[in-house]
Amino acid sequence: MLASLRSAFQAEAADLLNELDSSLLQLEANPADGEIIHRVFRAIHTLKGSGATVGLERLSRFAHRVEEVFDAARDGKVEVTPELTDLALRACDLLRVFLADADSTPDLESGTEQQLVTALKAFVKTETPAAPAVQAAGPAVAASLQRSYRIRYTPGLRMLFSGNDPVVLLTELCALGSAHVTAHTDSLPALEDLDPEQCYVWWEIELFSQASDETIREVFVFVADECSVEIQKGETDNRGPGPVRVSSRDFESFYCEAEEHLQVIEECLLQLEKTAATPSDLAELFRRLHSLKGASALLLGESGDLAPRHPLRFLHQLAHAAEALVEQQRDGNGSAAGQMGNAQVDNTQIGNTLFDVSAAMRRLLECIDENRHADLDPELLRRLGIAISAPKAETPRDAKQIAFVETAGQCLENMRTCFARLQAGEQDAAVGATYQRAIETLGSACQYAGMDKLRAQLREHKAALEAAAVVGALPGRWNTWSSSWTERSS
Amino acid sequence: MKTILAVDDSATIRQMVAFTLQGAGYEVVVAGDGVDALKQIAGRHVDMIITDLNMPNMNGIELIRQVRSLAPYKFVPILLLTTESAPEKKQEGKAAGATGWIVKPFDAPQLVATVQKVMR
Image 1 (cartoon, chains in turn blue, brown):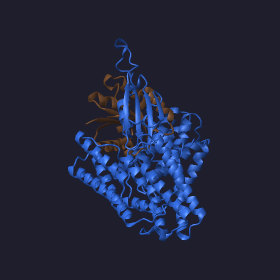
Image 2 (cartoon, chains in turn blue, red):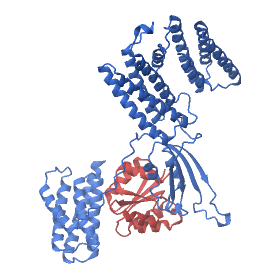
Image 3 (cartoon, rainbow over the protein chains, first blue to last red):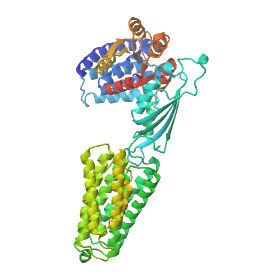
Image 4 (cartoon, chains in turn brown, cyan):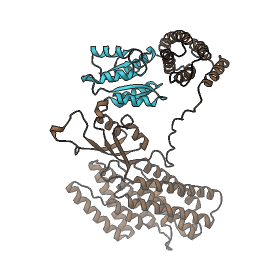
C-alpha cells in the first residue's frame, strides 16, 4: 500500500509545488495580499501533512519550517519581503529534490537544507514552543498494581448534540477492567419538561483495574470540558469484583516495605553462602523475617475476608516458618546434627531452604500484585515443617514421630488439593472419596503417633463433612483447622 | 456495515483513510471539501464523518455546522483532523458540534482506535 500511497502523493505534491511556485511569484508582486499568503500557507500545510502520512519525514519536517514562517505571516507577525519569497522559492526547489528521491540519504543536500532552515528560522521570532507535557513518572510501585476506583460521571445536558454517546464511553471504561455500573435517574425532570435529546442521567462506576488515573481520564478526553468526571481511588468493596481483594492503599506501602525486607534477606543469604553465619547476620535475618511476618499479618487483618489460598496468607505462613527456623539457628548456634536424631538438618540444607523460602515469597508478592492465586510447594512446606520441629524440644525425635509427620504431610496435601477442587465446583465423587480416604489415613496416623487431640479434631471434621455432603455444601472451616494443625504438628 | 465519509482536500489522506478504514471493516466514501461532502450525504446516509480543517470552498468547521443542522445528522459522530500546534481548533470544532479529533500526522492504528472510540 505504501508504494501506491507514495505515488499518489508524488502526483499531489507535484501539483502543490507548482501551485506554490505561482502563488509565491504572485506574492512577490503583492506582498500584502492576505489571500495569497493564505493560499501559500495551505499548500505547504497540506504538503507537510500528506508527506508525514506517507512516511516522508525529512520532507515533512522541512515543510514544517516553511509553514511556520507563513503561519506567522498570515497572522501578521511576519512581513512578506522579497527575501522571504525568494527563500520560499528556494525551499520549494529543495522540496522537489526530496520528493524526487523518496529515500533521501541524509547527506543529500544537507548543506542546502541547513542554510535554508537557518534562514527560515531567522524570520520567525523563536519562541520555544511549550514542550508537550511529559507524562508524569509512574509511582515507584509496580505499574501492574490492581487498583479500585469509584468514578462519578455526570455528562453535560447537551452532550448528545456533539455526537458523543455515554454508553460508548461507559463501554470503553468497563473494558479497562471489571466494573459495576449504576445509573442514576434522580435528575430526570417531570415528563412534560423532559427534552428527550438532553442527557439527564449520571453514572457511578466501581472499577477494578490495572489502569492508571490518566488512562481513565483518557476515556473522557473528548467530553472533558462539558461533563464532570470525578475519580476516587477507593477501598475495595468486599462485594467488588476480583478474586484477590487487598486494600490498594495499604498494599502499596506493604509492597514497598516487603520489597525492602526481601532484598536485605536475599543479600544476607548470599553473604551467608560464602562465609559462616555470625550472630549479627542471623539477628538481621531474623529481624527482617519477623518484620515481614508482622507486616503481612497486619495487612491480612485489614483486608477482611480473603480466600483461604490467598497468596498473602501463604506469605505470612512462610515468613512465620522461616523466622522460626532462623530463630533456632540464632539461639542454637548452628547445626547440632546429633540433636536432630534421624532428621539430617545441617547448615547447607537450612541455607537452601531459606533461599527457596525467599524465592517463594518473591513469587507470592508478585501474585498479590498481579491479583493471581498462588500455590506453595508442598515439599518446601514439609522441609520447613521438619526443620522447625527439630528440637526446641530436647527430646530427640523418634522414628514414630518422623513417620507420622511424613504421612500426615502427605495426607494434608491430598486433602488440600481435593478441597481446592471441590471448592472450585468439581463435584466428582472420586475427589470426594480421596478426601475421605486422606482423612481416614490421617486419623490412623494420629492414633499411631498417640496424637489423640488431633484425632478427635479430625473426627469432628469428618462428621461435619458428612453432614455437609448431605446438604450439598462444603464447610469453610478448612483454613482455620489446617493452620491450627500446622502449628500443632511441631 | 457502517459507512464513514472522509473529507480532505489531500488525495493522499483520502486514500489512506479509505484504505485503513475499509481494512477495519467499514465502508468509506470520500469528498474533497465541504461542498462536495454535503453533496455526498444528500445522496446517501453515512454513519460517521471525518473531516480536515483547512479546505477550499468550505472548510471543516463550516461543514460541521451545516451537517449538524440536518436532522438525520444531529447525533452522528464527527471527527476533526487537526494539528497539535492548534489546540484552539479543537475547541472551535467542539463548539461547532464535533465529537472529537484526531491529531495529524496519524497512523492507521490511531485512526481505527479513535473511530472505535466514538462509534459503536
